[in-house]
Amino acid sequence: MILRGLEDSDLDALSDIVSVTWEMDSYGNSIAKPASDAYLQSCIRRSDFIRVIEEDGQVAGCVMAG
Image (cartoon, rainbow, N blue to C red; front, side, top):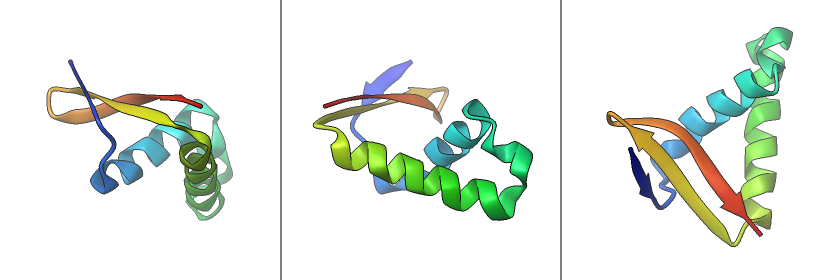
């Protein structure tokens, strides 16, 4: 497991994690994707500290703090 800084290329994977975790995916991709993207961006804007958790080359999650 690696803990590293956020990169733009992480956003899609993190948005997918948000969608599944908050069960937004149950509403279908046309609603889930924009909703999870918006929620992720709101969290990023409020955070002063963000680290991405990477395991075996794949984004597995993140830690954010304000």
